[in-house]
Amino acid sequence: MIPPCLFRIACALLLAFAALSAGAADFKLTDSEGKVHRLGDYRGNWVIVNFWATWCPPCLEEIPDLVVIAESRKDVQVFGVAMEFQDSKQVLQFAEGMFVNYPIVLGDRKTADQVGKVAGLPTTFIYDRQGKLAVRHVGKITCKQIECLLDRKM
Image 1 (cartoon, rainbow, N blue to C red):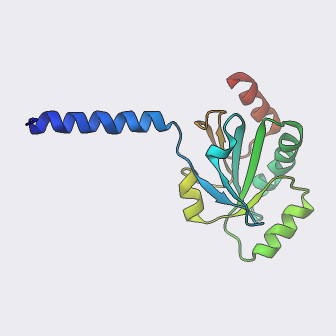
Image 2 (cartoon, rainbow, N blue to C red):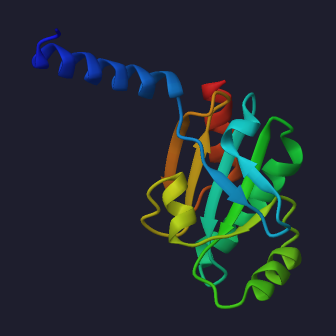
Image 3 (cartoon, rainbow, N blue to C red):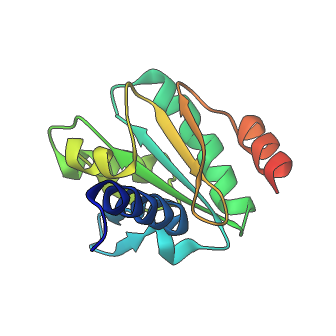
């Protein structure tokens, strides 16, 4: 029979090993067209998840830069998660008017909690090619900042 203290240590080690081998937390986002996206589906690529709102000026300022990244970097998948909105149709029309070329997710607190702590808008999460969180950025992010990060972390 295994002594209880050794059993607890073994269980703790197994849990720690499982957490390490799992790598990154996987999340599931369903875009406005009903397509389900999982972080694990994009292994080998960078993944950018940007939380924004139509009423947020810094959010709106960074959308053109995210459009450029989505268009110019084939090794990057961008997702825009719209938060705190009244009318989903208005959000989608707004995104279309901003020429958004990446999937839009109509999000809520539950959506945000899957990805990470969203303390304010905009908040951007960047996951590396292995699906591990590389950066959590609160506030406006620019194309130049993203490019520097991707080039540095490659």
